[in-house]
Image (cartoon, rainbow, N blue to C red):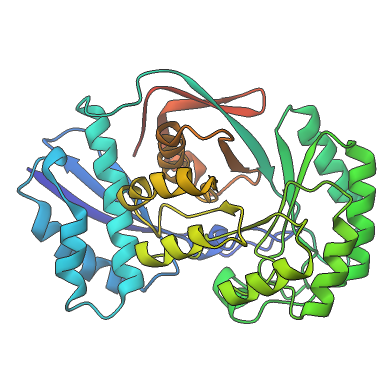
Length: 366
């Protein structure tokens, strides 16, 4: 009934970019493919940093053995996860593989007509870019912000400049590089002046603020610049978020892209100190995020999918936003062209005038 394939996609030669670029450009991506009834393939993306390719192969085979005799509408991946976690050591990889299967199965359900995406929807989109090295001019930031303002994006997100020895995402999370907070505030002031007060700005710190004194300086410097939010200012710890919220209650905080497990996701949503939750559908599955919808609504929290890698993730993230129907439906768009972009075809959405437009059906295929 099904055919399972797994792919590790990677460039043959690592490219040296003149600016910092997303780690997966060189590190690669891991995909699962489900072919059902000899139709076109439905794809799912595994979080590249959740485990080795060998682990992904082993876990995916175990998942496949439990679902291969069921029609897409009959598959219960929650039960599959519960069964496999009893013996699986790498639960991060298990959760990510489940998430990838969830993406593919959701796509198959859509093709069978068992979906609820039956009308067009426009989703506000912010440009996610703003990556330069410390020795490069901040004028790049200003030019980029103005460019995406002119393209009618909802807003623009940037990062503090990176050191020249730019490491991959996993290594940066283990030892987040420091930065000059005084220069960052000056850059932020310049950008706000150039784009005006109505264009939305966001700052992604990547957990790089390493002490509370530094955070206070930054929060005080940013609080009158009308940023929509600041993302992952400190390490991924709810106790730390509570401390920094008490330092400056005006700062709007975002985080959660690292979450793999349902229980942890609930804890992050229920925290009074975080306003925007950015779960990633290649770590936390589509089905689990759907189950969190009512908690989001009850606590008046906003879900912004962490949509940074492939069109598969974009497609499933847009599906979630269509289902959530939030008062502020918002998604990011990676402005950097991936070396793998042409490997994917997408149906169900397009990008026009700075926003994603969801068509009546929404899917990704190879």
